[in-house]
Length: 485
Image (spheres, helix red, strand yellow):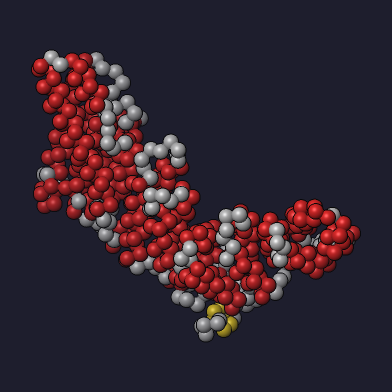
């Protein structure tokens, strides 16, 4: 009680602490926030003093003090009943605060406030909160920092916005490339783009269950009142009373992505997986983004694989590098043979040194093969593999070369799965017309024979460390799983 009467009396501390006033206020805000969180029930009778103290500091000229005041007010809202007008005012103010110097504390405040919205707001006012979110996003989202701020809120609280996803999904899909594909964009932006893509897929996975049950419970908190009672929303539609998050009346209960959205999302995953697959010691997180994109791509294929078109053009650059590497290696081999015949040992050593260079890294090959394996798994529902077999075959040469090197175990695993499953899914004795035109099986046969030839040379030379012989065993009927056990 003494703390409430004296320490939170702004008139008293402003007179007594002089130049240290803001520092003291910040510490008092931190302390009162903790007291509200852990002693909320005991401080019920002092709610007025608590909210008055924090509210006064929302107008502070000191940015840190102001943001801590927002954290305090959000904690107050999460613990105590608060007028809807105040909740919406605080929420809208935080939506518009995206500046770098404020974002950390703003994120803390929003992470406290947003899960409380379904509990603290009546259904009509919760719809207002959703409308404000959409309004600010569309009207002020032309500034990338503001757009990033808005998407981060939705990505962090996907279950809160699930019932209103129809209002956001189209804009989310359109924002993926803007966030994740520019060469100059930060790792954080790429991660956010992946968070949004994953959220969209998660929402799609949840939708059939939601449709079959006819409702979804609010993930933000408990229900208040009769969940079947109807109130009038601002747009004139009927919405259930507060208590279930299916309160949105925008038809989101059975909303599904259309074909264009599915294709944009799936092709985005292909592009970002390949873009981030190249090794970068300065940004090791990129490799994790690439692997995450591949996993999400496979999940998306299982959801929509039979109804979408995957654009081979997005993999064309990588396949072109594969073809270029093969041409370069063949040119080096001819030059090396010529040097041997003329006895030019110096040139021979240079050629052998250059032969070890690769235009396509192991990481590139692993990601590309994983993407192809995902598409191979749905080849009975999607024609991508057949339609693009002419360019896909270009990856065979660098993949077989990398698989035969000491550091190529992961490439070998992915390549083995691809080659074996490809032969299982498409009859070698009577292949589809697309494979005949592309000579895919002929190219695969030549690569396997090259592996066997090189393996024989290895064994005769008693070479150690390189394992082309393992790949040759697949041609001779050895079960391919044995190689990795």
